[in-house]
Length: 113
View (tube, rainbow, N blue to C red):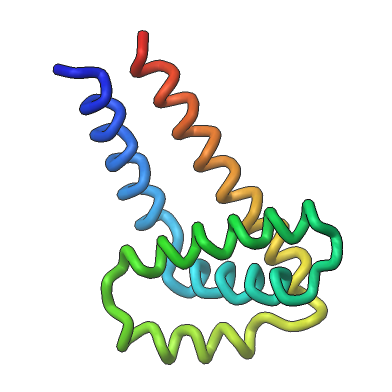
């Protein structure tokens, strides 16, 4: 089997389990929190992280494939993300994304051996 195919198959497996490990509510909460930070963050580095987190969670939500059922979830999470909790939510979402990225890098590094 070719190494790129092994890496692709392993990555697909990693992301399939990662998508199911977090609920759609959590993904929506992360998408909303990161969108708030993209609009309001003045520090360029933190804003760049927020943009990456936003695209990551947008991709996770898109992978779920059903836009219609997501509307009430997004509306509910809009009420759940407040000024008081958006910072901790964003921190948790960024850490989750970074841990998945690190796992993928480790997997890709091990597949080349």
